[in-house]
Length: 370
Image (tube, rainbow, N blue to C red; front, side):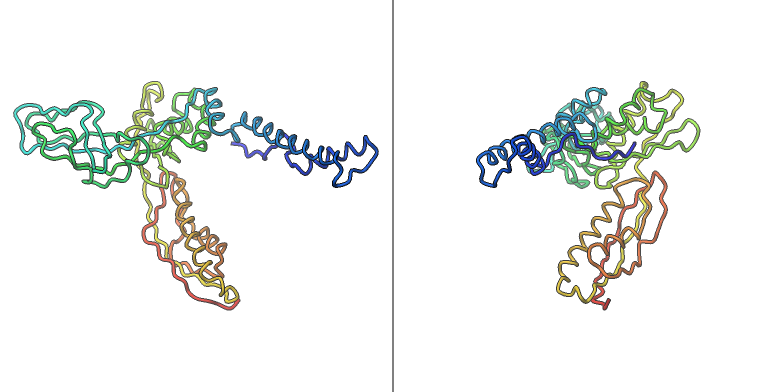
């Protein structure tokens, strides 16, 4: 993608518009307008209206450009390319329905059967299932009834109450953490998919085509690694918001889209995997210049924020090398005089790997003379 300069369609400075109007009047009238001159006051009022109109004109013109368009305007640009904004999606998890003992007949679990962790939040089956005769359990994907992120982050075993009683069912519990619930697709993510829209006119042989189709599975996907480890094999690894690994349900959704007959070249064998996690630790000691002693508390808070920003930056993109220099720069920009780094050490990552932090230790080493 080309990096283009910012563009303004109109001059929007109220002061410049006012100066231009008054200068033109004084030139035509042949006299200088004093500060309290009624004509000057009138022209100042007109200039304010014109400046505001120029702001509206500039905004309206920019809404026709992908880089600037937002909201409903961006939806219309997407419609030109046949790309729609992804709506809210509900969290999903896998729940195990268990019997006290095997039965000689199938035990039905109807579509819409609800389970809950409590607090009025419900997950429901999307289709009917049954526990086969002779079996004691079945694992079923359930979807949160309330859309958005509210259904995320329930730990294994936390969704354990059956709302709609079923004969023979003795126990329910989720066997995966709930995940995947997101709000409506953001402008930034939607804009990226519109920019990639031309890729969909090819079957997903090119890397960017697979990238495009993978992102349509879920708006929480912020990055995608596509590689071919062997002839005829395609390996797709999506990364989620916050640098999180995708749930099994999201991996299944990406696989379903990218392996469709009208997307996948006939000879491609597609697999969808979670990114490979590369763990690192942070152990640093920073020092503050003695002349900044009065600002120690503020600098310490800024350093803590800088470390958090580094952690978020490090896992915001697949294949981003673990780079202690980026950490040092952030901490020094936050006000530290010197930074001693025990870990992390520089580590080069492959395109399908993601760096995620384990332990984080940030020590204040005291004041130093400059």
